[in-house]
Length: 364
Image 1: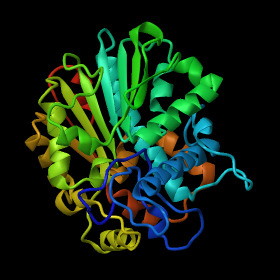
Image 2: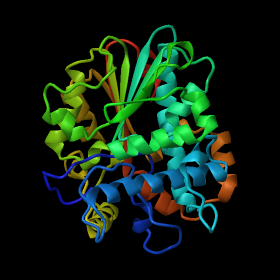
Image 3: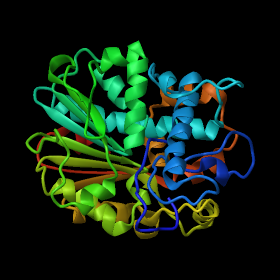
């Protein structure tokens, strides 16, 4: 997330449009966060790891805000937010809409994948998952079969998630009988042949050890690799090596990437400046600056088919009018111009090769 120091550990975490609130100056709400714990924070009084892990808390609060206000349905979000004296934190409408739209995009792509592969085993690998709740939502579907779900994050975050599962009967009823293993934990006791693994691992340890493998990762089934503002905090050569680690092993593979773009226009320069003031840096935004470059990176990584849409494009194209009206009625949105600027500075890019992604051909 910031000035690069090669010897620090690096990792990332869960969803939310990065640093929205600092883009708005001091106009209300609490401090925004990047979805991914991935760079090297030098915040006074806090270690790098503590600072990075703290961003996951902010993501959980943003998700809870969107759920509380009715943007999203997520019965598991509440278990990952600590109750404060002042009660629930309500994010600004622009942030809630961003959280909603990004989640909608991922839901659409992942749902299409699961439908295409309904009669076979399939796999999802989420990089920097943090306290993300997607695995619980998917496994709570009684019709879910043959899904192997991996999450990768700091060992401390993996341990925290295990503690939360053990402490909450509702979570434990979804991911039952969790077992600690190698800095992470897993459960093979899920319904219909489903499995879950939470790997406590710094991604750079994965790519710096050529012999390193992730326990339980299958190379013989269709797989999606997810990076929601995770890889953007790694240096570009490291990003390429992380992706290569999986492309070399898994023939039927797709990737979904969500991260910022357009750093050089006036809005983008302010975004980068505000991040730099917090000693946060996103190296990929300097290299993959627009949709064309985002798609090219995926083609160069070996994906045969690639697509992309900005968050603004997803809102316009993927959210039907009736749903737009429902979302508008929740809070209203006065800052329409600002929303359009912000939403067009974040992109979802996806690519695929091999079998299991037939329905993605029609997603545009």
